[in-house]
Length: 135
Image 1 (cartoon, rainbow, N blue to C red):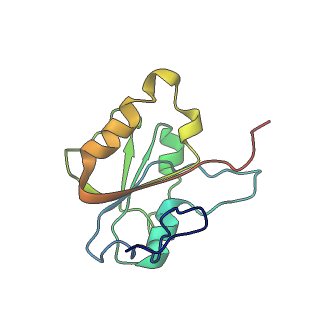
Image 2: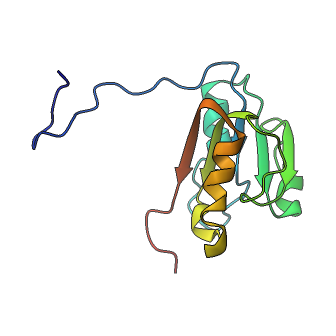
């Protein structure tokens, strides 16, 4: 029998471990967020967990890709999240930091479909969104 929280809901008793050492992470946005409180990007968080991860970054702005820290990202791809320029089952982890709110309405459904197309079996999708409304 699973432990329950008040109200009878199942309670989570353990967290999932980080991705394995041989994982292939993919970071969706490479934006700098200059002028705002700087949040750690998923790529940086994954690299801190295991420096051996080989990260691939995606952004639709070539200048942001050109400015990427080459010690953090081994590959940079220019494109949109709704049409990823990679093959099926290419990555173990996809991380997207504060970009989903910028996806055009017509691309809302194709974006997660693309993520799941390129994720390997039992892959992980990590997305973050702003905590407060943008001005």
